[in-house]
Image 1 (tube, rainbow, N blue to C red):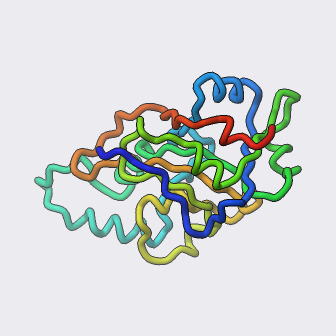
Image 2: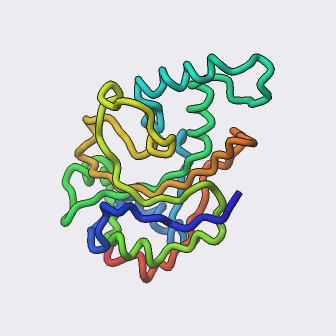
Length: 207
């Protein structure tokens, strides 16, 4: 795999304020490792994470149905392909908002040990060091909110990890996603996550 560099989506302005809500133990871990944790997509609570929209899944399934029985690829159908992608995508989540969010505090700050880190797109871009990471891409992009039946045609497969169902719209999520899927040698034997090194004094504007 190739070394990856963070690519920031053109829709994100450098001064856009981002927040990450986490408990105190995770904050200490972040400072101890001097890194952001990119968690494997299947470790999230949302079982729909990275799943193909309805029409895309049908088109993908049709494509696999036309493969020869002796095709050497271990990926056999659309569901199998999704599972490979989920196990090869690693995510770190942020919330875009000018100020703190009461809804996000309610979800992620239910105990007295919760904190919120404030940063900006430009600070993330200037602080991260991805020289230890290899893969297909490392993207910082906003999430779009559409239900599965509303998305027509096929997406780039990494786009599926920047799409969530409409009722999550309040999250206003921006995420960093590392894609390590290799079409020529796919594997599900992947770690639970990767540390993305960063300069914390650059990253953190306030806590």
